[in-house]
Amino acid sequence: MIVAGFTDTFGWSRRRATWTVYGVSMLLAMPPMINLEIFVPWDLTFGSGGQTFGALVAVVTVGWVMRRATLLEQIAGEAPSRTDRALIHWLRWVVPTAVMAAALWWLLTDVLGAAQGV
Image 1 (cartoon, rainbow, N blue to C red):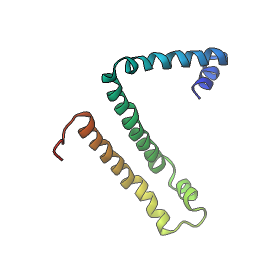
Image 2: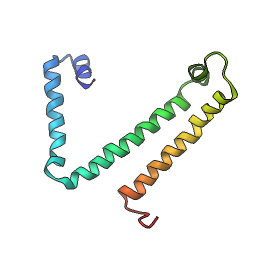
Image 3: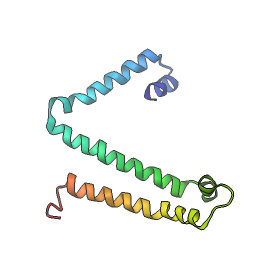
Image 4: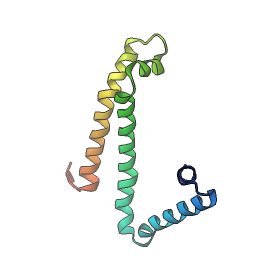
């Protein structure tokens, strides 16, 4: 997708875009290859943190940005039940709260090292 983005946006050839993505990827991969002290924080940040942030963006987009009628239609079709309507509240309030709680726990325990005795 990145290569296609470069070819579409900048008008680059596929070969040039591929080599550019390869080169930048190798440059970004060098610090953790050389020093494992860098690998762990980067893994936590871009792995755990990025996944949690992506999940939060996705659920907020579905719960708050999509029109409620469109969301109900996607979930239940023409005849939404009470359960289907409750699912929208679940997506708007419970899931983002749970994801943010997990993110906060990750930040406190793995990143900041707080809550060691918990």
